[in-house]
Length: 114
Figure (cartoon, rainbow, N blue to C red):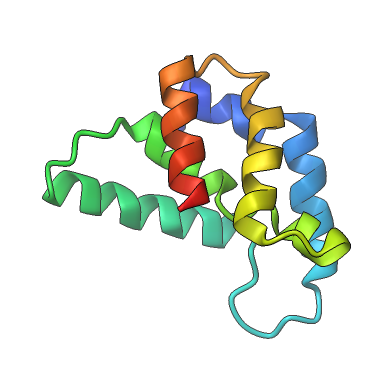
């Protein structure tokens, strides 16, 4: 079950629009489509690494990173912006409408940008 903060991302209209647009842009891509399955797989693997390495990141932050890390591929396909940069741009817009605090948002954006 997703937390309140993660649900705020999943239910964000802009996030849903970008996710739909990404699906359309990658409809002919044969492997590794950047869809919800990919985003959740990345989140789960990152959470396991976090636990096993005792890294101390919150589950909310890890899932936000996983859900948003490739959303900028929309801007990559449409405007030629590198996807990590585009993901930071779009993540800022989406996270601004959530209850993540400034410190968490900074952690998320830094992880996406690296």
